[in-house]
Length: 178
Ligand code: IMP
Ligand code: MG
Image (cartoon, rainbow, N blue to C red; front, side, top):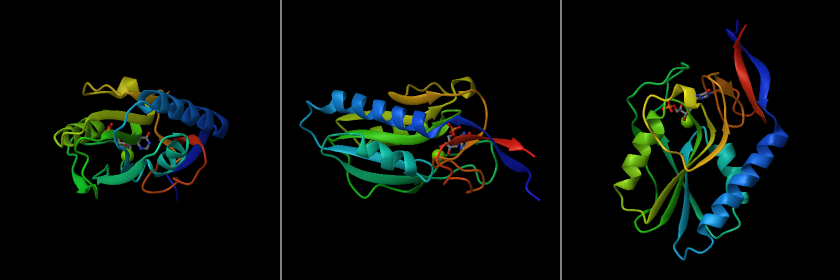
């Protein structure tokens, strides 16, 4: 028996598309004058669908890379123990770097990763998250590009999971107890 079921749609496909296009344009405007290498770094696994859409909305030469950080396990609550499980293939030194996350909740994961990456001396380091739950923040963190701010609800779809499931739902839905 499943304890959870898919609830209402929070960000539909149309809003998703609009949001990604807006973020792509913002990034384009901010980096079009730069003559450095632009590298978009996705946090796996949650960002993979957003990443795929986002990079296609950025009309600039760029490369992509990915990192994997240890996550929740199978729960819906994060812990403060964030670890790098798989590192980048390439050096980010002197490059323009944008780190891409699916959702910023407490902020711990993104903060830790941003700290780690900034130690590697990128020329610029920006952060981008498709979703943000500002009311859940426990650490202070500034995210440069935010797609949609949402209330304190656990969501799945558009790459986001519960116990590794539901990532393939094409929009963002609320996970409800059944
Ligand atoms: P934080 O460290 O608490 O900010 O947690 C960030 C990570 O927790 C994100 O990368 C997500 O993978 C996961 N997460 C947080 N909230 C949700 C949610 O509502 N649905 C799915 N995953 C979530
Ligand atoms: Mg994640």
